[in-house]
Length: 352
Image (cartoon, rainbow, N blue to C red):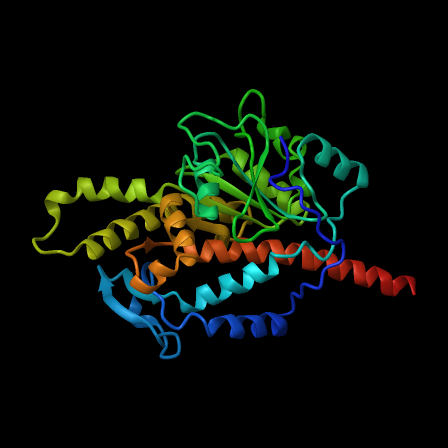
């Protein structure tokens, strides 16, 4: 198994991560996103009326309040498309600073797995079997399951050893489909170290309905090694559809699909938070690391970002945390290398 690409990138990079520079790049690419579609985004707890006037700029309220708990708004994609275009520019180059791991480990990873820590940003998608890790990778890449470049998916564990997939738009980001944790071959207590997860820039921990001890152990180790991580409750679309079927007889006549979807999505969000938030807090993990999404909707969302026709015509994509998740993962990857860069410069100053 090899890395998705063998292209060589210069060791030095002129990629900048300070916010002034990023804002400049953002402003330039924003000029090309004046006419874009609107997606439907659900906001649990806060209803749409709670937003300030500044936050409401450019927002079209579709339904101000549902059940007093849920707000649904039409969200213009201009800001995120601008960020996405800026991310594409940044990820045309390799990292500015190599990972701080022993050289013999780097050599081992490169020879056994094809994992290149110096020229690429590496994101590991981990978790127990059957949570939809491979489908999530395809969603992040904007690939349909079954595409030639897509990760292999299935109901049973399909990943026997780590396999990397180069992101088609963020060229120096490699998404790694890792074997399922908590199996006979990959025991929970040794999973982090035996899969060299400390060598990655960010970890995406895909979970089921509740956190398992394996998920928490991976997060604990990630904190110990200062590796950014997020939890993803995948398959939200399946859970929402199940709720819609169960509630079909209770649905008021004439209720539109968006409102029905929003109610079901709101119920799911509250259920996940009730079951998972307490576990996160008990283990001193920020609840902001939890994202609820659908790999299928994520795939549609990412695919739309680069399709000019979809940008012009708009498309009906219903999101919960998909947009925030993409931004969080990308920013986590960049933050990790920026942190290493700062430490290296500090060390250089001490040696002067």
